[in-house]
Image 1 (cartoon, protein in one colour):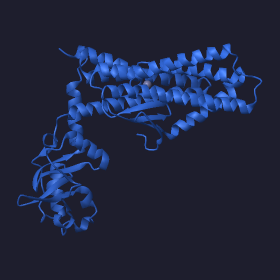
Image 2 (cartoon, rainbow, N blue to C red; image 1 turned 90 degrees about the vertical axis):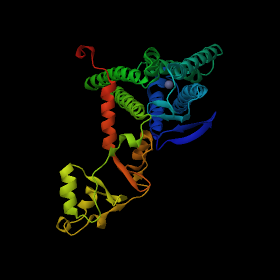
Image 3 (cartoon, rainbow, N blue to C red; image 1 turned 30 degrees about the vertical axis):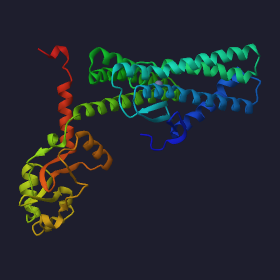
Image 4 (tube, protein in one colour; image 1 turned 90 degrees about the horizontal axis):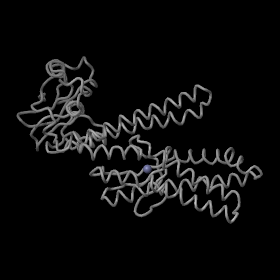
Length: 383
Ligand SMILES: [Zn+2]
């Protein structure tokens, strides 16, 4: 997800990375603090001081966000979860977990750790601000401390909105999960609540945009879209994981597929196999031995006038490690292979023995049935 994130440090074994989009936000924060917020609070201050103060405030926020994410990561590590790193991006920070929490309790503590850290930071900055006020520290220093106290409090409250996958949404999911014992069901409900928040955000944004403040409206719309996309992606990922857990390619594949033989002409292949059975990908087998495959893409490269004189053998794609997988491969490994290579069709073979074929649509078909089977009907429809 963070292809262009830059690693800036390593703290307590966690990689701290910054996505390019964070720099945009950092620049916006500095600009708005230095040109609007700070000048109204410090009217007789020079531009250079205002900008320097704004940069310091932005760096304070930057450190606060990292500490918020470190709190998530530290607690996650305590629960034995693997964290690949912390990334700051357009909407703040994210601690990238490589594994899902094992239960509602660990999910709750991992999720709540961030807002707790932000509240602690808010208190720490607030106390420092009080001390700075008492000792009459320079005005910019006091203003920065007050700003950081407020921004951390706002961050804690905002993150606690029950919009999955934000912290509050994870707390909600943890509670639903503990209550029902069903992670998938809990995630579905949390995603529904999150979608409601997303639409409220987008509604507010659009209202602001249509009543004249286009720029102010953009932000809530982006946050709404972000919530919709990320919560649905998290749900889809969990559905896939749950559905494919324990499934092997042998169970998901099409067994006894139609095959072609090497001597067959392409016109024969198209008419008697592709069109006759509505398929576009077939293994080529000769006397029980798997040789390779042909598909519609390969055949279409040949001029149609030559289909009667060209044989399957002339165009066959031979069996190799890139197009053939073993039947015992797990469904999840197959999905990651498809994601990694972009290849959607595989021959399933044991040694040179054809076992079946599997395509992305086989897996998606299975997932869609699984989704329907595991989604309870609304109560009014059950009788
Ligand atoms: Zn958080």
